Length: 384
Image (tube, rainbow, N blue to C red; front, side):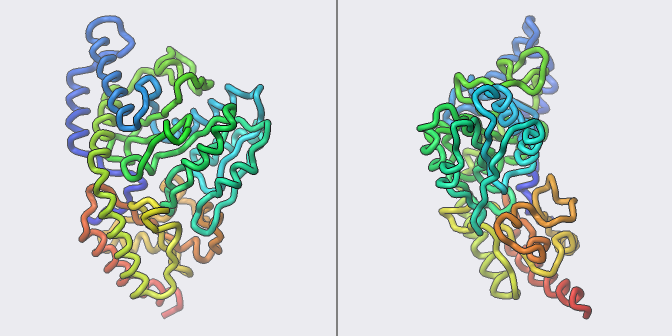
């Protein structure tokens, strides 16, 4: 099996599983309990917090554990809006955000906030100058993803952060779910106030994530309850999941060097496929400087992505169409449409995404499979 849908989810690392099983068997206390069993669980959570903080170069008290990227994004966006509602009611984001960001802003619009959705260029990149021009005295939040989950384009986070340094009342949120362990992350140096991660995107468990919250920044919590996670996120901590995420984060940082191989393999796949097939459209920024190394989006105008995905599955190659959170909806990708692709092209786009478990032969077999199945599908579409 050739699994190349790692931007949707990754296989949980065996080392992570061993850590989680050990915790489930031995550290079953509630971290809020006062007795020794609870204290042991509490220490484990705090050790995990310290480990994750080290991978991001931040303070442990700035790490909040959540149920995943969707909760982290919603807590960041809605938490800021509701905390600073008296400061202003204007929010800024882009047209190519993940659904957990985009829909959160749509909900806030329905509640009376004004949202500016910034356009992107043909590579899927927002202009930092556009961010600056969109700022008003009423702006309380800017939210821009780091690595686009569909095409891999890297956004100018550091440049946007520099612009916002002169606007201390504007909070800067970054969805870094697709970035961690693949590209450089430095929230402190870049002036990022809030940053979202999800464990299952880097071989950790599903159902656990992180929100980095800059020290002294307060958010209105989404959940009312016992006040866990410094009041940001009530609910009994998922101790095995948190321990597993911390282990996965450490491993992901140790394996960052493999990114250079991903970039080379991606370039070789593009060369092979575009030289052997007609009409292939390569989406996003695929350069080492402007794109994440592990994501590649290809479009085959006139075909449907669902058909391509299932044809490749019969070849034992597993890829995806658009974001896994919206891939079952038979509509053109909102991201690709925002980049200027027409419906006929956008509907025929697939995403190939690698992880540290990917090997070179996986990419070579994927290229061969595409070269076999695409002409067959094109003949069928033309009626013979």
